[in-house]
Length: 244
Ligand SMILES: *[C@@H]1O[C@H](CO)[C@@H](O)[C@H](O)[C@H]1NC(C)=O
Ligand SMILES: *[C@@H]1O[C@H](CO)[C@@H](O)[C@H](O)[C@H]1NC(C)=O
Ligand SMILES: *[C@@H]1O[C@H](CO)[C@@H](O)[C@H](O)[C@H]1NC(C)=O
Ligand SMILES: *[C@@H]1O[C@H](CO)[C@@H](O)[C@H](O)[C@H]1NC(C)=O
Image (cartoon, rainbow, N blue to C red; front, side, top):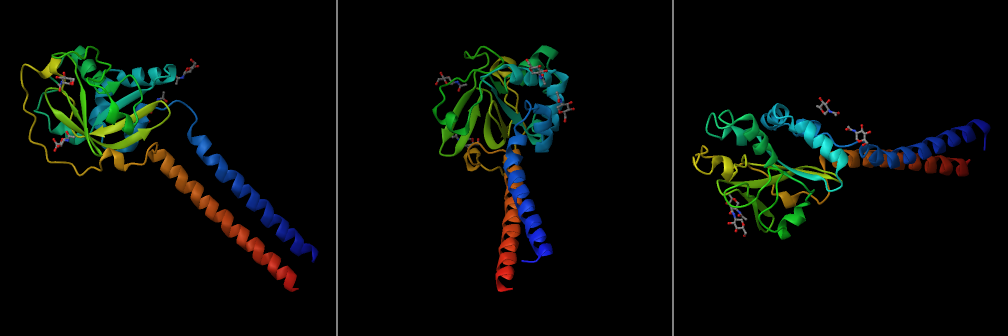
């Protein structure tokens, strides 16, 4: 073997090793730091009304603090902008500040629930809004096959796709704002007839997946592909050498 050729081969092998090492590090980096609910929802792209409500009620900070301090985690049901648009106009504005906080807390469970846990959950679910007795803040889950619905006694929402799923936080998209009996029971609000959203049922998302994870996986995959390409060039180099 000539000296320059050996050197080239050496370079190839070094960069090959580097590629493998880099691809192994990608998923680990994605797990660092506590999750940020606002950033997660912003990434979802269709939760501006809910983000605004979270900010107005300071529940965004509350959620982030709880995530940092709790082992149980949280589940957040995030209504889409469409869901807010379907409300009778003035529905949110007619609430007092405290009621707005309760409305947001009604969308949060004090444990992180996976999609499969909905199938076996016992009703009513406990929300951050507190008392789940009839007439107060009951939230029931009903499932049928892959479909998961939430009923409040006032309205019913369908859980659509998983927005985020981490070790202590699960965020699911819902097609209706969940209206608790305590705030909306007597006045029987009539949400405008909603056009069904073409959402993927929740169970269609692979368990434990998240947008982050899939992005990182594809990056890792393309790095692995690169590594493979490098490896095959190294092999052809060897083949070339043996022919000399
Ligand atoms: C969370 O994300 C939002 C939006 O990206 C950002 O404005 C805010 O500073 C972040 N909060 C923390 C605690 O990092
Ligand atoms: C999370 O908690 C740790 C320790 O309790 C604290 O040092 C850190 O500042 C907190 N981080 C956030 C984003 O609140
Ligand atoms: C969920 O709600 C949708 C729309 O209201 C309804 O068609 C479906 O039958 C419900 N499914 C379950 C499991 O309750
Ligand atoms: C929720 O489920 C409980 C237990 O099955 C039931 O007693 C209650 O009436 C249900 N409430 C609503 C709002 O569906």
